[in-house]
Amino acid sequence: MSELLQLNNVTKSFGAVEALVNVSFSVNSGEVVALLGDNGAGKSTLIKIITGVYNQNEGKLFLNNQEKSFSSPNEAMNAGISVVHQERNLIRRFSVGENLMLTNLPKNNLGLIDYNTVAKESKKWLDIMELDIDPNTIVSDLTVAKMQLCEIAKALSLESKILLLDEPTSSLSPQDTKNLFALLKRLVAEQDVSIVFVSHKLEEVFEI
Image (tube, rainbow, N blue to C red; front, side, top):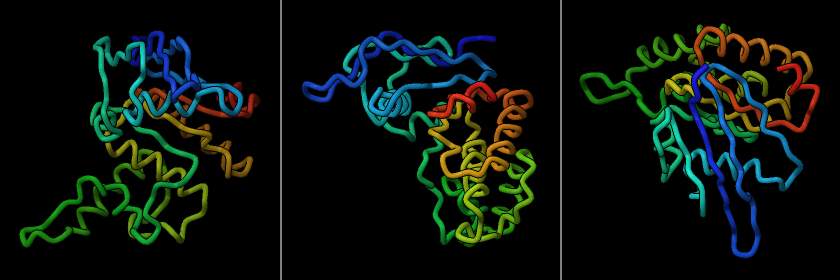
C-alpha cells in the first residue's frame, strides 16, 4: 500500500492553549486507520487541519507525496478528502438525490434543474453502496442510519479517496453499526477508499 496522506510534526495552538504538539499521522491507500483519544485530545483539530478549516502553526501535510496547504474544506474536497461529521450535514427538506448532487446539480436547456438526471446520477452512488433508497425520497423521511449512509454516498459522489468519519456510530443501533462496517470494508476493498475512523469505542475500532 502506498502512503496517501501524511502529516509531519503538526502543532496547533489557540492562544496559550496547545491543541496539537508535534503530531505525525499517516494513511495508506486502501486502509482503515483509527484516530483515538480522550475528549480534548485534539482529534477534531487534526481533522480540521486536514480539511483546511484550520492552518497549523508548524508542521507539514502531504497528499500523494506532495506538500499541500488547504485553505477551505472545498479545496480539500476537490483534492479527494471528505469528512462525515457526527451532526448531519444533509438538507432535510431536499431529496436524497438533490443532496448527493448538490455541488453539481445538472441543468436542462432552460437552465432549470434536471431532476431525471439528478435521480439517475445519484442512484449510481446509492447502488455502489447497495442502498435501497429512492433518490426522490425527502431526507427528513429517512431513518438516522440511512441519513448517515447517505452522507457517505454524498462523499463518494464527490469521488473522495479519503473519508474522515467523525464518530459515525454515535447515533446508530448495533445492527446499523454492523451494516455500516460491512459497507466500509467493501468500500476499502472494491473502491480503494481510505478511511480515518474516529471513535471512543474500542470494540468498534478492533472490529473495523
